[in-house]
Image 1 (spheres, rainbow, N blue to C red):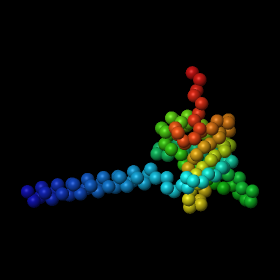
Image 2: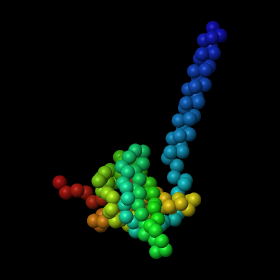
Image 3: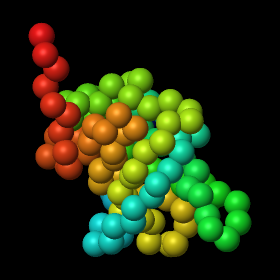
Image 4: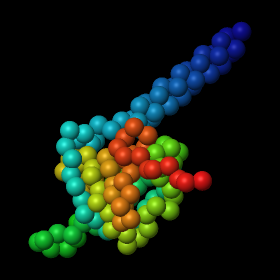
Length: 141
């Protein structure tokens, strides 16, 4: 009987620890506290990489500098499934494309931000999913 109680207690402790660990990861993952959502920065950029991946899509860009070499920025977006609902496609950007990107910058001052709006080289404007910035016009059938 004592062995069974010890085994049950250990199993309960493992389940509680797993639940708490999962909850903290979920909370940390969905936090945008690293971005200053009260500020906006506009980047006239050249795409160096478009990462259509889960859990978040990233646009890597170079921004020309008047005083030296281009500055590299990493722009975070929502998940592919959310972006699809906002009019995005996995092939909307490719290396070398020019774009005007509005981001909420990182609070720590590093070159990165959370996408607010992007104007693609063809003039289309997209946001960060439904309800977050411009939506793509519906496609003609």
